[in-house]
Amino acid sequence: MSKTFTVHIDVDSPVTLAKFYNLQLKDYPIEKLEKFYQITFERAFEILDRYGIKATFFCVACELEASDKIRDVLLRAIEKGHYIANHTYTHPFGLNELSVSEINDEIGKTNAIFKEKLNIVPIGFRSPGYAIDTAAVNIVEQHGLKYDSSAGWPVFHVLFKLMRWLKSGKGDQQMQVGFGETNSRFRRSVYIPNQMNWKKRDKSGRSFREYPLAASFFFIPCYTNLHLYFPPAFTRFLLANTRRHRLMIYLMHIIEFASLEDDCVPAEIIVHPHVKTPVSIKFPKVHNILNYINRHRNQMNIEKDYIN
Image (cartoon, rainbow, N blue to C red; front, side, top):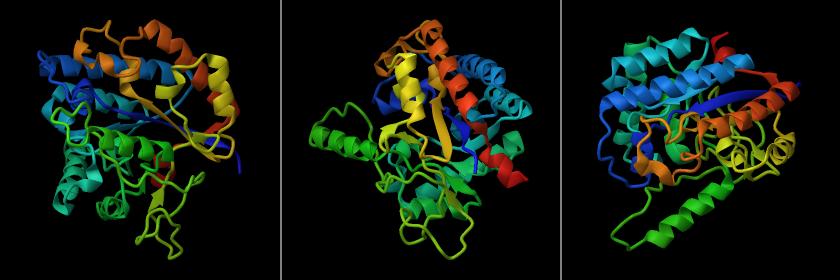
């Protein structure tokens, strides 16, 4: 079996990022959010087209619902052969800590809006902040989705728990941090999650699948948010050490296609990594990453496999 890769892009807008950092955006009308979508998606299309990559965009449905211009951007993505996946309705931090009714709303409303606005039925799901557990995975499947890709990096589970402990009892929360049971078994391959414990393999013939995010040396997150810190040579070294993954899901975020030099990016979210780094500095690194992956692995689209 050849080694393959697929690119996932989480569409976490400035509105979502401000909520994560518990910040209030002073002047951010819907027109700026629309411009953010238009600029970042066009830049993403340009880079992805260069390498013939068809990505999966994990989108927040309440923003699509609020704007026809955002709908048009996502329709253009579909026309170009990319895929749209479920990233919940409001991007709550700590999805698995919500009630069953609330989780159903977050997932079900998203599916309904995608069908109404984009005329698609999504196949994939990722929980905001990788906050997932067995109950949430089972609800995802009940809504007709075919796979989850929230099995993140064990180090994140530990860090998020530590962050919660450090801020416990404090009146001013600096960040909203939800955590689930980020897969602590260091999974390296696609598997069928057990209905009683999503971290165990199911042997009953269940068709729903878990696609773990790739890691270098078992636990170092393999995604641009980290790789943009490093010189290209070291990033290539880390990518080379994801070889244990037959399928490398390379995770990006749409904010990485913008910076504070764009007037659609509010100054309040300067705390987010790389948002103050000019696009002219970030893009050569992104090109280097995608070029390396594209030369060493074959592209595989999870959605395309299910559709076919």
